[in-house]
Image 1: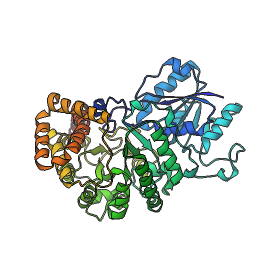
Image 2: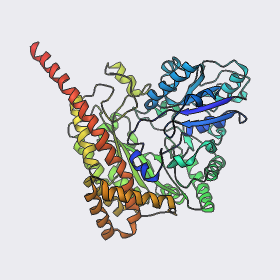
Image 3: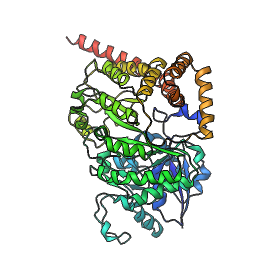
Length: 532
């Protein structure tokens, strides 16, 4: 038996974190570290395992020293925190294992800090690693595809990607659910599309692999057993990547939810072609899905073609967003600035599109060239890469854009300052409420959510700098959509994070970057002038 400490490094604050709104619910983190829960399920179950999520609790030397091996996972954005943990472990003489997107993308960098790497997915490699750790024969790297090894079944040798039907139920029992606002669940990996900037297809492939209905029910039962009530985020790269299998799965989920009650609802990520399939949307809402995140990326047809987002071309994107809203699915969306085809007018086009589409929560970020993606290779080939991407989308890009950097920063500033002004945000919410039609059996409100709503109301109506817009918003909702007041309060509460994070963090940082760029451009201009 071994003592294992599973560590989730700290995530920097971002639009994704929801930090300012989580305070209303008394939660420390939006989602638990699902990858580590899966790793725990892949290890021998008689091992002593503890989980420390650094987003919800500190990591002490005593925690580290109580373990025989420390296992970490993380994304590029967690890089700094992971480096700090690995340095502490090395100083204490502890054995470390690192996996996840960061280790997979930049294995040589991580190998300098960790004892063992798991590169790629872990369903085949982690059991092999565990056996080797016990035998004292652990290798420095475990890669896909696997070499012939007696520790694993022969049918898994040379496997390119794990069979998702072999993935175990994550160890949700390791969580203290009081820390988390939502739960995570994964039904598939991979996406059939070929977006130039996306690292999902590099890591997980373009053939979506789906878990069985039995697996999903066991995972829902495991979440239920924790006592959690609220929203479950299906973290699939593209929930409808394999429509055939998802069509079979959704009625099973609906039946489970009917038997369990309505204390859970669901949201997920999907591609825009979901709006082509009314029956599939109906099956999703019948199963309890209330929202979907869609990568719209840009209102520019030229930009979509440039980045190979062809599934979004030749369609009326605003019309299809409206269709989804009217069919009962709320739409969250991702947008990107920094494509080569972007012109100076892209910033106003982005604002107008999001406002007209009535998307309250728009994740607008700067394009980043992630390691190993086609975009990264293109930028390296053309000599435009400045540095490795940090995972932070809310500032300068890591490559030379066609528009000047100063113009990109000023334009991005304009976009987010507009979108997350109180006036514009609440206007989108009202337009969204007018379109949205409830579908399926909605989740019941629990006492914790009522308390959270009261805290949000007090903060936003009394203390916030946008309180006048908030009051106006609620009064207009009561006049025009009185039956949707609960939804309006919930929307506004979530929006508090976007408004506050924009005002307190992103805009000041953009101003700093703009100030830094000004003398650089002045120096460049002087050099050009002196040489002519």
